[in-house]
Amino acid sequence: MLANSASPIVTTVLPWVAVASTAAALLCYRYWDDPIFHAPRIPRKHKDAFFMAPPGRMPFIGDLRFVVANFFRMHDTDVELSQEIDRIRREEGRKVLCCTVLPFTPPIIGTSDPEVVEHILKTRFDVYDKGPFFFTRTADILGHGIFAVDGKEWHTQRKTAALIFNVRNFRDFVSVVFAEEMDTLTSRLASVADTDEHIDIQDLFFRFTLDSFSRIGFGEPLGTLAQAEPIPFATAFDRAQVHLVWRFDTPLWWLIEWLSPKAREHRRNVATIKSFARRIVQKRLAKMEDNDEQLGGHDVTAVEGSSHQFDLLHFLMRSKDPVTGEMPNLDQLVDYVISFIIAGRDTTAQALSWTFLMLHRNPGARRALLAEIDAAFPFPDDDGSDHPSYDQIRALKYANAVFHETLRLYPSVPANIKQANAPDILPSGAPIPKSALLVWSPYAMGRSTAIWGPDAAEFRPERWLPTTSDKGIVRAPAPQSAFEYPVFNAGPRTCLGKSMAEVEGVFVLVEVLRRFHVDVVDHESVTYDRSLTLPMRGGMRVAITRRTRSEPLAPRQMEW
Image (cartoon, rainbow, N blue to C red; front, side):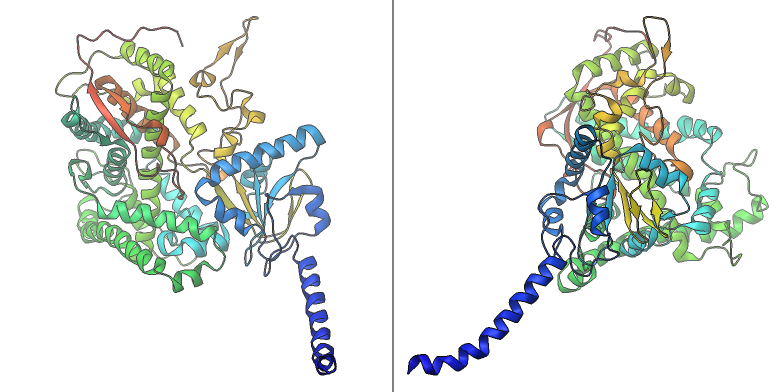
């Protein structure tokens, strides 16, 4: 009787169970290697032929678990994936790329191949934009600044910025701005030298580059280096950039922000950043009319006999929209200022921080660098007035090699992204659908044995110096191409501030080492944070010791 009473239930439920099981099986088959709401889709035959997947791909969510689990070590994960791609090329003779798939996200195609990087940045420059994926996730910070826009809008800002990035101005930057800010940095370091106090040198470098670039770019002396307290703008700026990278890796980021405290915290940071940049712009707008009357409004870099020098902000204010012919409004100028602060503050300060870490971990390179410095310059005067010139900085071959070798291993922009505005075919034959994201990793490329040889993981500045073979043939230093070493980008979007960053970085490096020994307190714990750039997580604390006149000069062990 029990069996008879259960029979209608069984006959009713079983068909639905069968239908649900069949539907689940079909959905699993459909979304086995493609997450839900993922478009455009790459056909499976193309995936098998041209792409590899990160480990642990799952139905429905694709590579989401892999991305979340590796968020804070993603750059090292890029290295591991690059090594696997190199293994496939060597052992199987196939050129593949890594394709990461996430729900509600276009396919993310990663590469560390210089040939593909050249294709993206130069050969098919017109196909690969910053694109809507990047713009929508960074709009509240970068807005219409140079790093987030394409086409005529980008070209206008780049052409305008090029007016101040020239050798004549670089010489002035070294002799005036960098020298004066260096005096303040020296005072800060001297105040803790030969004491038990440890100082966060990355924070000092951030303040140095912020103060320097604010004077160079905006004519605004900020004086943050002379202050001991935290800088609200800098704190908000750093936190906001970390948040933007989280958006890149998070499907439905806008919904998660709305449901969590993240949005409120980020809005506060955005307000602090915008307020800081707005004050700079408004202060200059208030003076703009008087300056035009005094100087006649001529677009020149300097006026003979005048203490006023036209800077980047001056030219940005007078730039005209290529379509409407109108000059930028207040909000646009704020966007411009924020983007150029990233370029002028973050990248060089981070490169300097990683350089001192590398010198601490490689005492042989530090001795060689001190040898070059001691041979080139006398012991510095107590008043700090004997700063190196632009030409002297450029002539320091080993110091420049140290700086570039650090950037090879710790590029200030460790990963970069473009979006295809049309279908394309890569040099390997891999098809790229419209809207796909192309990501290349200078961090992984700098560690690639395929590019740099078996010692790619070693810090060896000598690789940047010309070498002579047994037959007397002089070999050029590495790299052979900007696409092998895209730390300053490459192609039409090559960093305009490359030369200024090199000069500023080596200038500070030399000036600090002429006067002080810098020892990292806990070098093994230093690691990077995920951000638009490559800051050290939590900074880097160091002990400062004065160099003395009685201290023997470092032995000069080699000729360059």
